[in-house]
Amino acid sequence: MSGLAMPKPDAETLRRRAEIAADMRIIVPGEGVVDAANEMRAFESDGLTAYRQLPLVVVLPETVAQVSRVLKYCSDRNIRVVPRGSGTSLSGGALPLEDAVLLVMSRFNRILAIDYPNRIVVAQPGVTNLGITTAVEQEGFYYAPDPSSQIACSIGGNVAENSGGVHCLKYGLTANNVLGIEMVLMNGEVVRLGGSHLDQEGYDLLGVMTGSEGLLGVVTEVTVRILKKPETARALLIGFPTSEEGGQCVADIIGAGIIPGGMEMMDRPAIHAAEDFVHAGYPLDVEALLIVELDGPGVEVDHLIGLVEAIAYRNGSTTCRISQSEQERLTFWAGRKAAFPAVGRISPDYYCMDGTIPRKELPRVLAGMRDLSEKYGLGVANVFHAGDGNLHPLILYDANVPGELDKAESFGADILRLCVEVGGVLTGEHGVGVEKRDLMPEMFNQVDLDQQMRVKCAFDPNHLLNPGKVFPQLRRCAELGRMHVHRGEVAFPDIPRF
Image 1 (tube, rainbow, N blue to C red):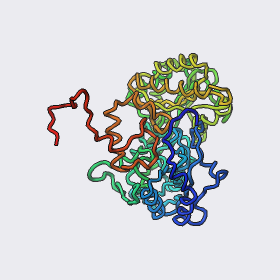
Image 2: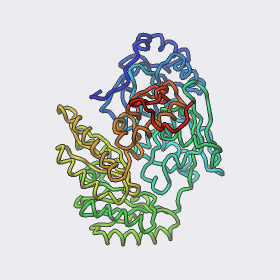
Image 3: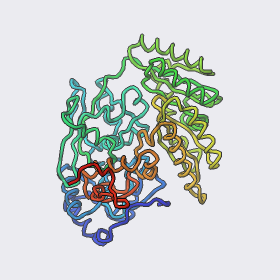
Image 4: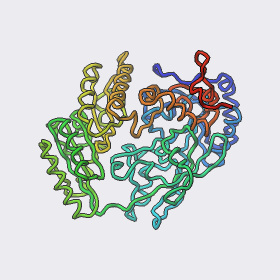
């Protein structure tokens, strides 16, 4: 797995592999356990395919009781567990471990309830993101968060990563659209957080779980809010001679008090790749392409289109197309939604990054990425959620060329350092996983990391759930309580100690 350091496998667990697989078959009978090496290859990586590792055994439960029994069995025997949804994570969050049970939730694939009057859907975690919208669209409803992988990614995985998508600017991330979950703790206990009501009582544990990347518990049920489809939705396709002008247009649109349903940008390499792949009619003589979608009542949308068009031309736009039909609007988005596979056609491999910056820093960061591209001798194509500053640089490389993966990783790390330097953060929606794990100290000091680790310890004191992810150093919970003595003096000596 490249040079990635992961927790040292437990020799006793590896020795008992056959016994563990047999016990798993008792808990999950039928075809719910996979332990043949060639059959486990399908699970050896997630969307971050640069890193691969066969798990100890793959378990596919179908009931909450089975999940509970699997986790309690592993807890009692000190066996690590890696939860997995559809495996579309782009940060290595579902990367297996050699000595860990890979708990795959794909068989939890049913929608349990649809409540139109209260505008909620209750779904099992293996239901796809798009599957929720498909289930309610005949009544004019939809589920707002829409990652590019929405046709495949699971709603449980969306909760784990706090996924977003092109419409998160106006309608929020997963955290803003999840009302409740059922989850199983590492000790096998089944708990519920939130529900079908707007706000939960007490501490916001639902907020803690959303984006927890499989480190705190395994989600077995999700309650989400659904929205009524807007009366009108139209999109503008706006081209600019430079990315800086496009970035300034984004800032001016938001500054004018306009909140589009979605606002995405692509640079020249991404534009050409997407157009060759989808034939969406994108202009090929521009350096930056902005897609702005406006939704709501028809009169309001028409008014806002005029405002956005004027802002675009003030910022040097050389082309501006406005969708005249629903099909044309969908065509505008088709290229953006297919940008990742499209870039895969122009490069043997690419490394998809994910960082977030203040919108006003967009021109500076894009210029910095161009400098880094020259430094490392690797191309980069940019597609990003321009409205909320969530960048997705795609670093182009060839894994068959010795050293290119290492260069791509270093290039990506420098991009994320640049994001933090300008006041941004390491991730927007892909999570930390293993990809950004060792960069966490760029953003957090040791006190910050220790506090986050204490939350982990409260849910999973033995660090059996998804170890080696998010935190740059694997430690026992007991180590967090140690008193540090330096030259005979403790920190803050004036504080009473008992």
